[in-house]
Amino acid sequence: MPEYKLVIEGGRALKGETQVSGGKNTSLAVIPATILAEDPCLLDNLPDISDVRVLEKIFSHLGAKVSWNPEGKQMGIDPSNLTTNTVPFHLSQRMRASYYLMGALLGRYGYARVGYPGGCDLGSRPIDQHLKGFRALGASIKEEQGMIVLEGKLRGANINFDMVTVGGTINVMLAACRAEGDTTLTNCAKEPHIVDTANFLNRIGAHIRGAGTDTIRIRGVNKLRGASYTVIPDQIETGTLMIAAAATRGDVVIRGCIPTHMEALTAKLLEMGILVTSQDDVISVQLRQGHRAIRLSTQEYPGFPTDLQQPMSALLTRAVGTSEVIENIFDSRFKHLDEMRKMGAKSTINGRVAYIEGVPELQGAPVYAPDLRGGAALVIAGLMANGITEIYNPENIARGYEHLESKLNALGGSIRREPLELDNNNAISI
Ligand code: EPZ
Image (cartoon, rainbow, N blue to C red; front, side, top):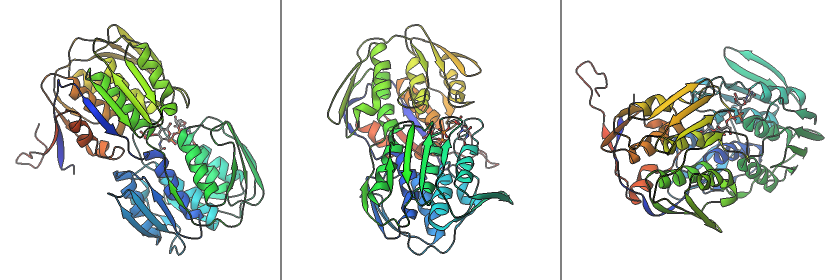
Protein backbone atom coordinates (compact mmCIF):
# COMPACT_ATOMS: atom_id res chain seq x y z
CA MET A 1 0.00 0.00 0.00
CA PRO A 2 1.65 3.30 -1.00
CA GLU A 3 2.31 5.47 2.09
CA TYR A 4 2.80 8.90 0.57
CA LYS A 5 2.32 11.21 -2.40
CA LEU A 6 4.68 13.85 -3.76
CA VAL A 7 3.42 17.45 -3.74
CA ILE A 8 5.23 19.77 -6.16
CA GLU A 9 4.84 23.55 -6.36
CA GLY A 10 5.90 24.37 -9.91
CA GLY A 11 7.08 27.44 -11.81
CA ARG A 12 10.55 27.76 -10.23
CA ALA A 13 13.73 27.67 -12.31
CA LEU A 14 16.37 25.19 -11.05
CA LYS A 15 19.68 26.88 -10.32
CA GLY A 16 22.93 25.77 -8.71
CA GLU A 17 25.09 22.64 -8.53
CA THR A 18 24.22 18.99 -7.97
CA GLN A 19 26.04 15.66 -7.83
CA VAL A 20 25.20 12.46 -9.73
CA SER A 21 24.88 9.21 -7.78
CA GLY A 22 26.26 5.80 -8.67
CA GLY A 23 24.54 4.01 -11.54
CA LYS A 24 21.33 2.04 -10.91
CA ASN A 25 21.61 -0.37 -13.84
CA THR A 26 25.33 -0.91 -13.37
CA SER A 27 24.88 -1.61 -9.64
CA LEU A 28 22.04 -4.06 -10.37
CA ALA A 29 24.48 -6.03 -12.56
CA VAL A 30 27.71 -5.71 -10.53
CA ILE A 31 26.13 -6.76 -7.21
CA PRO A 32 24.89 -10.14 -8.61
CA ALA A 33 28.26 -10.55 -10.37
CA THR A 34 29.97 -10.76 -6.95
CA ILE A 35 28.43 -14.25 -6.56
CA LEU A 36 30.98 -15.46 -9.14
CA ALA A 37 33.81 -14.52 -6.74
CA GLU A 38 34.96 -17.08 -4.15
CA ASP A 39 36.04 -14.37 -1.66
CA PRO A 40 34.47 -11.18 -0.30
CA CYS A 41 34.02 -8.10 -2.51
CA LEU A 42 33.71 -4.42 -1.54
CA LEU A 43 31.60 -2.26 -3.88
CA ASP A 44 31.60 1.54 -3.69
CA ASN A 45 29.45 4.41 -5.07
CA LEU A 46 26.28 2.26 -4.92
CA PRO A 47 23.08 4.38 -4.95
CA ASP A 48 20.64 4.10 -2.05
CA ILE A 49 17.63 3.07 -4.16
CA SER A 50 14.94 0.51 -3.45
CA ASP A 51 16.10 -1.87 -6.21
CA VAL A 52 19.50 -2.13 -4.46
CA ARG A 53 17.69 -2.80 -1.19
CA VAL A 54 15.72 -5.60 -2.88
CA LEU A 55 19.00 -7.12 -4.08
CA GLU A 56 20.27 -6.92 -0.49
CA LYS A 57 17.19 -8.95 0.57
CA ILE A 58 17.83 -11.49 -2.19
CA PHE A 59 21.46 -11.88 -1.11
CA SER A 60 20.45 -12.35 2.50
CA HIS A 61 17.95 -15.01 1.39
CA LEU A 62 20.79 -16.76 -0.49
CA GLY A 63 22.91 -16.79 2.66
CA ALA A 64 25.49 -14.24 1.53
CA LYS A 65 26.90 -11.96 4.23
CA VAL A 66 26.07 -8.36 3.22
CA SER A 67 27.14 -5.18 5.05
CA TRP A 68 25.43 -2.22 3.35
CA ASN A 69 26.14 1.35 4.40
CA PRO A 70 23.75 3.45 2.28
CA GLU A 71 25.19 6.74 3.52
CA GLY A 72 28.71 5.63 2.71
CA LYS A 73 27.53 4.06 -0.53
CA GLN A 74 29.59 0.97 0.27
CA MET A 75 28.46 -2.64 0.27
CA GLY A 76 30.62 -5.52 1.51
CA ILE A 77 29.51 -8.91 0.13
CA ASP A 78 30.82 -12.30 1.20
CA PRO A 79 29.27 -14.84 -1.20
CA SER A 80 31.49 -17.70 -0.08
CA ASN A 81 28.90 -19.68 1.86
CA LEU A 82 25.55 -19.46 0.13
CA THR A 83 22.92 -21.72 1.67
CA THR A 84 20.59 -21.91 -1.34
CA ASN A 85 20.59 -21.32 -5.11
CA THR A 86 16.90 -20.47 -5.16
CA VAL A 87 15.48 -16.93 -5.58
CA PRO A 88 11.76 -17.17 -4.74
CA PHE A 89 9.17 -15.41 -6.89
CA HIS A 90 8.14 -12.97 -4.14
CA LEU A 91 11.66 -11.53 -4.36
CA SER A 92 12.46 -12.00 -8.08
CA GLN A 93 9.22 -10.28 -9.16
CA ARG A 94 10.11 -7.07 -7.31
CA MET A 95 12.59 -5.99 -9.98
CA ARG A 96 13.72 -6.73 -13.51
CA ALA A 97 17.41 -7.23 -12.69
CA SER A 98 16.74 -10.31 -10.56
CA TYR A 99 17.34 -12.17 -13.82
CA TYR A 100 21.11 -11.62 -13.30
CA LEU A 101 20.99 -14.16 -10.45
CA MET A 102 20.44 -16.81 -13.14
CA GLY A 103 23.75 -16.12 -14.91
CA ALA A 104 25.67 -15.63 -11.67
CA LEU A 105 24.40 -18.74 -9.84
CA LEU A 106 24.59 -20.90 -12.97
CA GLY A 107 28.11 -19.71 -13.68
CA ARG A 108 29.37 -20.24 -10.13
CA TYR A 109 27.51 -23.43 -9.10
CA GLY A 110 26.09 -24.96 -12.29
CA TYR A 111 22.58 -24.66 -10.82
CA ALA A 112 20.06 -21.83 -10.36
CA ARG A 113 16.35 -21.76 -9.54
CA VAL A 114 14.95 -18.25 -10.02
CA GLY A 115 11.44 -16.84 -10.19
CA TYR A 116 10.48 -14.77 -13.23
CA PRO A 117 11.66 -11.14 -13.03
CA GLY A 118 9.34 -8.16 -12.51
CA GLY A 119 10.16 -4.54 -13.34
CA CYS A 120 8.46 -1.62 -15.06
CA ASP A 121 5.47 -2.50 -17.26
CA LEU A 122 6.83 -1.39 -20.64
CA GLY A 123 5.04 -4.00 -22.68
CA SER A 124 6.22 -7.55 -23.22
CA ARG A 125 9.71 -8.10 -21.78
CA PRO A 126 10.64 -11.73 -22.52
CA ILE A 127 14.01 -13.23 -21.53
CA ASP A 128 14.26 -15.70 -24.40
CA GLN A 129 17.67 -14.36 -25.43
CA HIS A 130 19.06 -14.89 -21.93
CA LEU A 131 17.83 -18.50 -22.00
CA LYS A 132 19.10 -19.02 -25.56
CA GLY A 133 22.58 -18.01 -24.36
CA PHE A 134 22.50 -20.28 -21.31
CA ARG A 135 21.38 -23.24 -23.45
CA ALA A 136 24.18 -22.58 -25.94
CA LEU A 137 26.62 -22.75 -23.00
CA GLY A 138 25.27 -26.21 -22.19
CA ALA A 139 22.67 -25.52 -19.49
CA SER A 140 19.41 -27.48 -19.39
CA ILE A 141 16.45 -25.21 -18.62
CA LYS A 142 12.99 -26.15 -17.39
CA GLU A 143 10.11 -24.40 -15.72
CA GLU A 144 8.73 -25.74 -12.43
CA GLN A 145 5.75 -23.97 -10.80
CA GLY A 146 6.72 -20.64 -12.36
CA MET A 147 10.39 -21.00 -11.37
CA ILE A 148 13.10 -21.16 -14.03
CA VAL A 149 15.51 -24.01 -13.24
CA LEU A 150 18.90 -23.91 -14.97
CA GLU A 151 21.49 -26.64 -14.61
CA GLY A 152 24.68 -27.80 -16.31
CA LYS A 153 28.45 -27.73 -16.51
CA LEU A 154 29.08 -24.85 -18.89
CA ARG A 155 31.29 -24.95 -21.94
CA GLY A 156 32.25 -21.99 -24.12
CA ALA A 157 30.17 -21.32 -27.25
CA ASN A 158 29.56 -18.82 -30.05
CA ILE A 159 26.30 -16.98 -29.41
CA ASN A 160 24.62 -14.40 -31.66
CA PHE A 161 21.77 -12.46 -30.04
CA ASP A 162 18.63 -12.21 -32.24
CA MET A 163 18.20 -8.63 -31.05
CA VAL A 164 20.32 -6.22 -29.05
CA THR A 165 19.56 -6.87 -25.38
CA VAL A 166 21.29 -5.20 -22.43
CA GLY A 167 20.16 -7.76 -19.88
CA GLY A 168 20.83 -10.68 -22.18
CA THR A 169 24.35 -9.48 -22.99
CA ILE A 170 25.28 -9.05 -19.31
CA ASN A 171 23.54 -12.22 -18.10
CA VAL A 172 25.22 -14.54 -20.62
CA MET A 173 28.55 -12.78 -20.00
CA LEU A 174 28.21 -13.59 -16.28
CA ALA A 175 27.66 -17.29 -16.94
CA ALA A 176 30.35 -17.55 -19.64
CA CYS A 177 33.04 -16.24 -17.25
CA ARG A 178 33.12 -19.64 -15.54
CA ALA A 179 32.43 -21.81 -18.61
CA GLU A 180 35.19 -24.14 -19.78
CA GLY A 181 36.80 -22.69 -22.91
CA ASP A 182 36.13 -19.63 -25.05
CA THR A 183 32.83 -17.85 -25.70
CA THR A 184 32.14 -15.25 -28.37
CA LEU A 185 29.01 -13.10 -28.06
CA THR A 186 27.92 -11.16 -31.16
CA ASN A 187 25.20 -8.54 -31.76
CA CYS A 188 25.83 -7.39 -28.17
CA ALA A 189 24.49 -4.27 -26.47
CA LYS A 190 27.14 -1.59 -25.80
CA GLU A 191 25.71 0.40 -22.85
CA PRO A 192 28.21 1.94 -20.37
CA HIS A 193 27.03 -0.42 -17.64
CA ILE A 194 27.98 -3.42 -19.79
CA VAL A 195 31.55 -2.09 -19.90
CA ASP A 196 31.41 -1.38 -16.15
CA THR A 197 30.25 -4.93 -15.37
CA ALA A 198 32.98 -6.40 -17.62
CA ASN A 199 35.56 -4.21 -15.86
CA PHE A 200 34.40 -5.54 -12.49
CA LEU A 201 34.52 -9.14 -13.76
CA ASN A 202 38.06 -8.63 -15.09
CA ARG A 203 38.99 -7.10 -11.73
CA ILE A 204 37.99 -10.38 -10.01
CA GLY A 205 40.00 -12.42 -12.54
CA ALA A 206 37.77 -12.96 -15.60
CA HIS A 207 39.12 -12.67 -19.14
CA ILE A 208 36.69 -10.47 -21.09
CA ARG A 209 37.54 -8.44 -24.18
CA GLY A 210 35.40 -6.23 -26.38
CA ALA A 211 32.73 -5.04 -23.89
CA GLY A 212 31.26 -1.83 -25.32
CA THR A 213 31.43 -3.21 -28.86
CA ASP A 214 29.02 -5.59 -30.56
CA THR A 215 31.43 -8.52 -30.10
CA ILE A 216 32.53 -9.72 -26.65
CA ARG A 217 35.09 -12.50 -26.23
CA ILE A 218 35.32 -14.39 -22.95
CA ARG A 219 37.88 -17.00 -21.90
CA GLY A 220 36.37 -19.06 -19.08
CA VAL A 221 38.32 -19.49 -15.84
CA ASN A 222 37.76 -21.94 -13.00
CA LYS A 223 38.11 -19.48 -10.13
CA LEU A 224 37.33 -15.82 -9.53
CA ARG A 225 38.59 -14.01 -6.44
CA GLY A 226 37.26 -11.11 -4.35
CA ALA A 227 38.12 -7.46 -5.08
CA SER A 228 37.11 -3.85 -4.42
CA TYR A 229 35.33 -1.88 -7.14
CA THR A 230 33.66 1.51 -7.63
CA VAL A 231 30.71 1.61 -10.02
CA ILE A 232 30.31 4.39 -12.64
CA PRO A 233 27.89 7.33 -12.21
CA ASP A 234 24.32 6.99 -13.40
CA GLN A 235 23.90 7.92 -17.08
CA ILE A 236 20.11 8.16 -16.82
CA GLU A 237 20.08 10.23 -13.62
CA THR A 238 22.57 12.60 -15.30
CA GLY A 239 20.22 12.92 -18.26
CA THR A 240 17.16 13.39 -16.06
CA LEU A 241 18.86 16.26 -14.20
CA MET A 242 19.97 17.86 -17.50
CA ILE A 243 16.41 17.72 -18.82
CA ALA A 244 14.95 19.08 -15.54
CA ALA A 245 17.34 22.06 -15.71
CA ALA A 246 16.25 22.89 -19.26
CA ALA A 247 12.55 22.21 -18.61
CA THR A 248 12.45 24.78 -15.76
CA ARG A 249 14.44 27.34 -17.81
CA GLY A 250 17.19 27.03 -15.22
CA ASP A 251 20.96 27.07 -14.99
CA VAL A 252 22.43 23.94 -13.43
CA VAL A 253 25.92 22.45 -13.04
CA ILE A 254 25.94 18.63 -12.75
CA ARG A 255 29.07 17.16 -11.15
CA GLY A 256 30.44 13.62 -11.01
CA CYS A 257 29.09 12.52 -14.39
CA ILE A 258 30.65 11.14 -17.60
CA PRO A 259 29.84 13.58 -20.45
CA THR A 260 30.79 11.09 -23.17
CA HIS A 261 27.90 8.86 -21.98
CA MET A 262 25.50 11.77 -22.58
CA GLU A 263 26.33 12.64 -26.20
CA ALA A 264 23.01 11.56 -27.75
CA LEU A 265 21.00 13.65 -25.25
CA THR A 266 23.39 16.61 -25.44
CA ALA A 267 23.05 16.66 -29.23
CA LYS A 268 19.24 16.77 -28.97
CA LEU A 269 19.25 19.51 -26.33
CA LEU A 270 21.59 21.63 -28.49
CA GLU A 271 19.27 21.01 -31.47
CA MET A 272 16.41 22.43 -29.36
CA GLY A 273 18.38 25.61 -28.66
CA ILE A 274 19.45 24.67 -25.12
CA LEU A 275 22.99 25.58 -24.00
CA VAL A 276 24.96 22.50 -22.86
CA THR A 277 28.69 22.66 -22.05
CA SER A 278 30.92 20.05 -20.45
CA GLN A 279 34.42 19.67 -19.05
CA ASP A 280 35.99 16.63 -17.31
CA ASP A 281 33.24 15.18 -15.09
CA VAL A 282 30.96 18.25 -15.19
CA ILE A 283 28.03 19.15 -17.47
CA SER A 284 26.29 22.57 -17.40
CA VAL A 285 22.79 23.16 -18.79
CA GLN A 286 21.25 26.58 -19.30
CA LEU A 287 18.04 27.77 -20.93
CA ARG A 288 16.67 31.28 -20.92
CA GLN A 289 14.19 31.47 -23.78
CA GLY A 290 11.86 28.92 -25.45
CA HIS A 291 13.08 25.69 -27.06
CA ARG A 292 12.32 24.09 -30.41
CA ALA A 293 10.37 20.87 -31.10
CA ILE A 294 12.38 17.89 -32.44
CA ARG A 295 12.12 14.39 -33.90
CA LEU A 296 13.35 11.84 -31.36
CA SER A 297 13.97 8.14 -32.04
CA THR A 298 15.16 5.86 -29.23
CA GLN A 299 18.01 3.49 -30.05
CA GLU A 300 20.42 1.16 -28.31
CA TYR A 301 23.58 2.88 -27.00
CA PRO A 302 25.18 5.10 -28.25
CA GLY A 303 21.82 6.21 -29.70
CA PHE A 304 19.22 8.15 -27.72
CA PRO A 305 18.44 6.07 -24.59
CA THR A 306 14.89 4.76 -24.22
CA ASP A 307 15.14 5.51 -20.46
CA LEU A 308 15.35 9.25 -21.25
CA GLN A 309 12.44 9.25 -23.70
CA GLN A 310 9.92 9.78 -20.93
CA PRO A 311 11.74 12.62 -19.09
CA MET A 312 12.44 14.25 -22.47
CA SER A 313 8.75 14.19 -23.38
CA ALA A 314 8.06 16.45 -20.37
CA LEU A 315 10.46 19.02 -21.85
CA LEU A 316 8.79 18.64 -25.26
CA THR A 317 5.33 19.53 -23.87
CA ARG A 318 6.42 23.18 -23.87
CA ALA A 319 8.56 23.22 -27.04
CA VAL A 320 7.68 25.55 -29.92
CA GLY A 321 6.10 23.25 -32.52
CA THR A 322 5.12 19.58 -32.59
CA SER A 323 7.68 16.89 -31.71
CA GLU A 324 7.68 13.35 -33.02
CA VAL A 325 8.85 10.70 -30.51
CA ILE A 326 9.52 7.16 -31.77
CA GLU A 327 9.99 4.46 -29.11
CA ASN A 328 11.89 1.67 -30.85
CA ILE A 329 12.90 -0.40 -27.82
CA PHE A 330 9.72 -1.16 -25.86
CA ASP A 331 6.14 -1.89 -26.92
CA SER A 332 4.46 0.43 -24.47
CA ARG A 333 6.38 3.35 -22.96
CA PHE A 334 3.97 6.31 -23.33
CA LYS A 335 1.68 5.90 -20.27
CA HIS A 336 3.10 9.09 -18.76
CA LEU A 337 1.62 11.11 -21.67
CA ASP A 338 -1.91 10.20 -20.53
CA GLU A 339 -1.03 11.72 -17.14
CA MET A 340 0.55 14.84 -18.66
CA ARG A 341 -2.63 15.49 -20.62
CA LYS A 342 -4.30 16.13 -17.25
CA MET A 343 -1.79 18.99 -16.87
CA GLY A 344 -2.73 20.57 -20.21
CA ALA A 345 -0.12 18.85 -22.39
CA LYS A 346 -1.21 17.98 -25.94
CA SER A 347 -0.16 14.62 -27.41
CA THR A 348 -1.46 11.84 -29.61
CA ILE A 349 -0.10 8.29 -29.75
CA ASN A 350 -0.05 5.97 -32.74
CA GLY A 351 1.58 2.68 -31.75
CA ARG A 352 5.23 3.36 -31.06
CA VAL A 353 5.03 7.00 -32.22
CA ALA A 354 3.87 9.93 -30.07
CA TYR A 355 3.26 13.45 -31.40
CA ILE A 356 3.66 16.13 -28.71
CA GLU A 357 2.32 19.59 -29.63
CA GLY A 358 4.00 22.25 -27.52
CA VAL A 359 1.77 24.44 -25.32
CA PRO A 360 2.75 27.71 -23.57
CA GLU A 361 2.10 26.46 -20.03
CA LEU A 362 1.24 23.35 -18.03
CA GLN A 363 -1.15 23.43 -15.06
CA GLY A 364 -0.57 21.40 -11.89
CA ALA A 365 -2.84 18.37 -11.39
CA PRO A 366 -3.03 15.04 -9.47
CA VAL A 367 -1.27 12.35 -11.56
CA TYR A 368 -0.07 8.73 -11.24
CA ALA A 369 3.53 7.60 -11.76
CA PRO A 370 3.07 4.65 -14.19
CA ASP A 371 6.67 3.41 -13.90
CA LEU A 372 10.14 4.58 -12.88
CA ARG A 373 11.09 6.93 -15.73
CA GLY A 374 7.48 7.96 -16.33
CA GLY A 375 7.40 9.03 -12.70
CA ALA A 376 10.56 11.10 -13.20
CA ALA A 377 8.93 12.67 -16.26
CA LEU A 378 5.94 13.70 -14.13
CA VAL A 379 8.23 15.25 -11.51
CA ILE A 380 9.77 17.37 -14.28
CA ALA A 381 6.31 18.29 -15.57
CA GLY A 382 5.29 19.26 -12.03
CA LEU A 383 8.38 21.48 -11.70
CA MET A 384 7.43 23.17 -15.01
CA ALA A 385 3.72 23.59 -14.28
CA ASN A 386 1.91 26.52 -12.71
CA GLY A 387 0.42 25.58 -9.37
CA ILE A 388 0.44 22.32 -7.43
CA THR A 389 1.00 18.81 -8.86
CA GLU A 390 0.43 15.70 -6.74
CA ILE A 391 2.15 12.49 -7.82
CA TYR A 392 0.64 9.22 -6.64
CA ASN A 393 2.60 5.95 -6.72
CA PRO A 394 5.90 7.83 -6.21
CA GLU A 395 7.51 4.60 -4.90
CA ASN A 396 8.19 3.85 -8.57
CA ILE A 397 10.57 6.83 -8.65
CA ALA A 398 12.47 5.76 -5.54
CA ARG A 399 13.31 2.46 -7.30
CA GLY A 400 15.86 4.17 -9.51
CA TYR A 401 16.77 7.66 -8.27
CA GLU A 402 18.78 8.33 -5.11
CA HIS A 403 17.40 11.33 -3.15
CA LEU A 404 15.87 12.89 -6.31
CA GLU A 405 13.52 15.14 -4.30
CA SER A 406 16.28 16.54 -2.06
CA LYS A 407 18.58 17.10 -5.07
CA LEU A 408 15.86 19.05 -6.90
CA ASN A 409 14.88 21.00 -3.76
CA ALA A 410 18.53 21.97 -3.24
CA LEU A 411 18.37 23.47 -6.76
CA GLY A 412 15.32 25.58 -5.87
CA GLY A 413 12.52 23.12 -6.55
CA SER A 414 9.65 22.65 -4.10
CA ILE A 415 8.84 18.95 -3.65
CA ARG A 416 7.54 17.42 -0.42
CA ARG A 417 6.13 14.09 0.69
CA GLU A 418 2.66 14.08 2.24
CA PRO A 419 0.88 11.15 3.84
CA LEU A 420 -2.01 9.85 1.77
CA GLU A 421 -5.48 10.81 3.03
CA LEU A 422 -7.61 7.66 3.17
CA ASP A 423 -11.39 8.06 3.02
CA ASN A 424 -13.68 6.11 5.35
CA ASN A 425 -13.48 2.90 3.29
CA ASN A 426 -9.70 3.04 3.34
CA ALA A 427 -9.42 4.11 -0.32
CA ILE A 428 -6.97 6.81 -1.35
CA SER A 429 -8.87 10.05 -1.66
CA ILE A 430 -7.63 12.55 -4.27
C1 EPZ B 1 17.61 -2.85 -19.36
O1 EPZ B 1 16.39 -3.56 -19.42
C2 EPZ B 1 17.39 -1.76 -18.32
N1 EPZ B 1 17.08 -2.37 -17.04
C3 EPZ B 1 16.24 -0.86 -18.76
O2 EPZ B 1 16.16 0.21 -17.82
C4 EPZ B 1 16.55 -0.27 -20.13
O3 EPZ B 1 15.43 0.46 -20.57
C5 EPZ B 1 16.86 -1.39 -21.13
O4 EPZ B 1 17.93 -2.22 -20.61
C6 EPZ B 1 17.30 -0.85 -22.49
O5 EPZ B 1 18.41 -0.02 -22.31
C7 EPZ B 1 18.12 -2.84 -16.29
O6 EPZ B 1 19.27 -2.74 -16.66
C8 EPZ B 1 17.74 -3.46 -14.97
P1 EPZ B 1 16.75 -5.22 -23.04
P2 EPZ B 1 16.31 -4.98 -20.22
O7 EPZ B 1 16.96 -6.65 -22.75
O8 EPZ B 1 17.54 -5.75 -19.96
C9 EPZ B 1 13.48 -7.24 -25.86
C10 EPZ B 1 15.16 1.64 -16.30
O9 EPZ B 1 14.28 2.51 -16.40
N2 EPZ B 1 14.04 -8.50 -25.36
O10 EPZ B 1 17.84 -4.41 -23.64
O11 EPZ B 1 15.01 -5.58 -19.91
C11 EPZ B 1 12.81 -6.45 -24.73
O12 EPZ B 1 11.46 -6.85 -24.58
C12 EPZ B 1 14.98 0.32 -17.00
O13 EPZ B 1 16.22 1.76 -15.64
C13 EPZ B 1 13.56 -9.70 -25.88
O14 EPZ B 1 12.66 -9.73 -26.74
O15 EPZ B 1 16.30 -4.46 -21.72
C14 EPZ B 1 12.92 -5.03 -25.24
O16 EPZ B 1 11.87 -4.78 -26.15
C15 EPZ B 1 13.68 0.25 -17.80
N3 EPZ B 1 14.08 -10.86 -25.42
C16 EPZ B 1 14.25 -5.01 -25.97
O17 EPZ B 1 14.55 -6.39 -26.27
C17 EPZ B 1 15.07 -10.90 -24.48
O18 EPZ B 1 15.52 -12.01 -24.10
C18 EPZ B 1 15.40 -4.45 -25.16
O19 EPZ B 1 15.40 -5.11 -23.92
C19 EPZ B 1 15.54 -9.67 -23.97
C20 EPZ B 1 15.02 -8.48 -24.43
